[in-house]
Every structure is written in C-alpha cells, then in structure tokens.
Length: 94
Image (cartoon, helix red, strand yellow):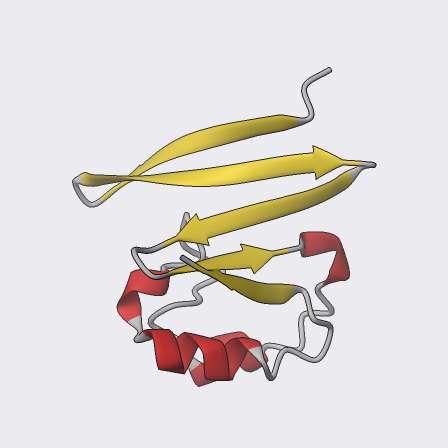
C-alpha cells in the first residue's frame, strides 16, 4: 500500500502536479505555486462555500483541478484560507 502518491493533471496546455498524501486514511491534496502551496483536506470540508464566493477564479468545484491558486495573489489566498470555517484549507509558504 502506498502512503504517498501524485497525480499529474493537464489543464489548458500546462501540467500541474497535485500531491496526494494518504496517512491514516486522511487524504490531503496540495496545489503548489511558486510562493505558496494550498493544502486541502476534503474530509474536514463542511462545504460552506466561502472559498468559492470569495475567490471564484481560484475555487471552482466543477473544474479539475478545482483549486487554481495561480489565479490570485499570495495575499488574497492567505486572507481567504484564514477564513475557512472548517480549516479544511491551509497553506505552506515556499
């Protein structure tokens, strides 16, 4: 059983590496940019929709990948992530 894997997804002519970490049955998805990695824990998400309402160019549940952090500044991403009520979203600075 693999504890760590990654998917490469093609989107509009470029590739994005999404790191999927599975430890103790928790799925963690990472969406990297040059300066910041957005981290999403799907099982913690309560689907309040604050992320989608705040930054619709970044968060689109109908798209794959559904998080495109390159569509906002680092400051905008941090501000939005800090408002996530379930803390399903977090970030790591590069």
